[in-house]
Image (cartoon, rainbow, N blue to C red; front, side, top):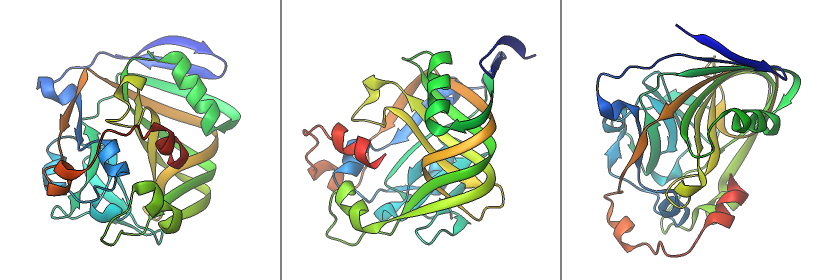
Length: 257
């Protein structure tokens, strides 16, 4: 049973006990690492069908960085560069994905008016452990929501920042209701994953979405699932073994996130 713990500055927090049938269910799983994707490893050998066995919630991309990937309640969606949304086929493949089996152990309610993505991040950071690994599911009606998706890359691949310069499409959504899915990760996961907030959006009508840049809202419900740890499976594509992963790409990552 949820217990109300705190209420301040328009925020309320409730927590409940969480049980797992299998110990691995409470770990974040990721396929490949963010620095490999940044360096241009755009193909992977993990199918969407296989990914679903690793988690029922999360974010990522598809081979050739062909759009944005979002998993919610076990269903995998692709937001394409033209703004369309479709459910991904089990035979599709991913070059990078970050997932877990989602079960909220904390629920945060934030009330505005005029909440921005930046303000929401500040509130969440204030309430959560800075060294924790968190899956976040945010539900709201958003007066404004800015997202992006990418056109698929063509070989020979460039780096991800170079690809996005010419192939990123930005969507300015208005009065959209839906779910933001993703993670808040600590600084020590830099170079393997995206430190800080990394969220993708899916509208309830399944007609829009993408990687989130900004939004506004007057009230939000934030479901939080704290992971016990994380598991990394290296990309088995041959290009992963050839790519130079020595450079620190943190500054480049901040520019595109």
